[in-house]
Length: 239
Image (tube, rainbow, N blue to C red; front, side):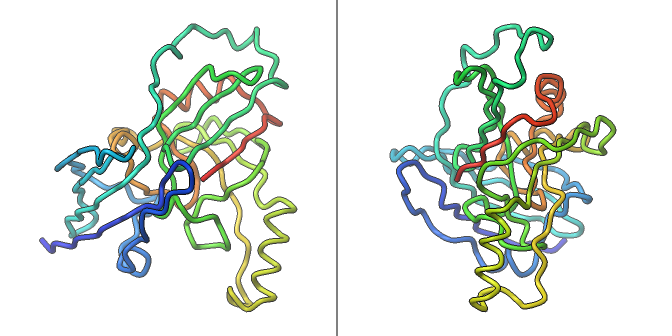
């Protein structure tokens, strides 16, 4: 079996602290496609750097390759005290908001400006990057809404987001006019929040960025979130 090592240093920070850049091998070669689950995920090492970050080394199989990946993420806040029972029928959905924090690998559900649920999440391979165009596998940043809900997704549940919105189009057109992206590039779409393949929760637990730009959470968390929010719920995605 071939061995391939990828160092995936994420610029994941609080207070805009720059950590590093992704290894070019990840961007050019190996891709963990959403349609192709990886296997045999194993935690090799995990430690804190004393500066508010977790450094985690994992291995997993992709096709005939065994991948070693190092992930650096901002140490997230505690998930304690957010397990109170919630009755979906008692919530005013107009007062709900989903806040996605890419640096903390978290999806939080707020009600009346207070968090009522926090879930672990993963994104595309380069969480520190904003989406620019179709195929870059980056998770877009900005303010969106839920446009539709699919209870029959292959990833348990799927909630589509209003990407691309006006601000995304403005940014895309500006970059194209400046020659910073190909003239034939397309802006992309079909971005949402969803679960993961059966038995894949460890990918989210370890922070492995496998999506094509969507936000992925554990299946049990996705089922709960899906039941609480509705079409039109606000979603804010932050770095």
